[in-house]
Image 1 (tube, rainbow, N blue to C red):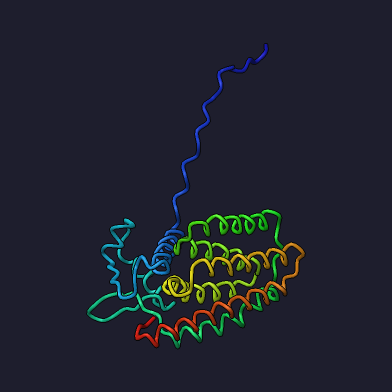
Image 2: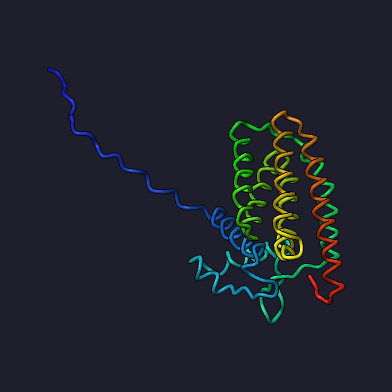
Length: 243
């Protein structure tokens, strides 16, 4: 006796997506709100309502409070008694301190547990450069900052030192919105040009595995960016405006 198989193909059903864990939901909401603050969707002084956010994300107010508490610990919002949670503004003295620390941390990227880049990793950086070339044809402030964020993630992926990655990310997002806020004074095309040059230099160093040079390249470009911002901040302050 032979066993014949049914010639009718069986329908392949895709497995339902795995529901997000509580931790994954927390991280997702945190990143969404952080991006909104950095992209100035929530301008300094904006009030963030726990109730409205809970309704938007269809969760209880408890995890919303946890997300807002983390954002407050990072200096992006402030809890004001009797008022609620307010998006903070940028303090120029604090900005200087953050940039000085970022300058020193940049050198550690190539020293602490550097992770060799794969061909796919390098291709992502090339894609960012190509995106930069496309974006600069029709310059947009938000597009610039999103591009900058994506490159920042590629840079932090180059070190396996988790504390360094966490501190670098926290400091980056404290100052990212300053770049967007000052963009009219800085000059968008000029910033695109300087940023493209940084990506090219990092790519060239990564292609030959020169991790220490990447730290120096990053430090140099952070320093130049800071000097441009301070120069324009001085021009703005003399005209009677504030950051």
